[in-house]
Length: 168
Picture 1 (cartoon, helix red, strand yellow):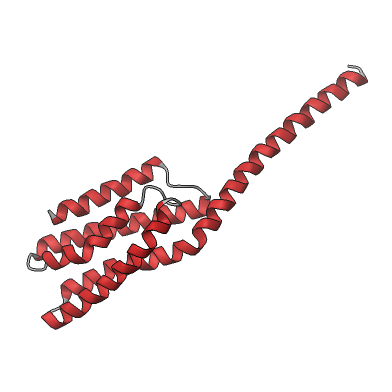
Picture 2 (picture 1 turned 30 degrees about the horizontal axis):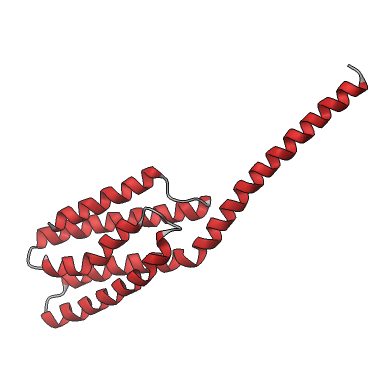
């Protein structure tokens, strides 16, 4: 091998390495962009999603109508937080919107199902699993700097459907 051939091979390797570096830098920039977009929303979403399920659960355990009304108003305040947050989460976490809409309806569904304890507890159990799946998906997206994948979106839809079916 001559020095010219060695120089040519080194130049080809250097060119390939620089193109690969550009490609991987672009991926890293996209991850950083998504993480930056999700950073202020993740904690708010976690609080709102947990709060609406928790207040709906306590609302169903209330013995008197006065306590029920008080917890219902607290659940409605949590719903308003989630309603305000949902449009901001729609595009960064594409696919979680359906689950968030189901959780927004949870206080009203629990209010209607108050007399049927079995149905209400089943609905709360499914809402808790939906909340858990939303939390896991959002944290995975933040950790990995990506949007929800198709499997996560389908899992959210499945848990949403189960929660709606428990109400119907």
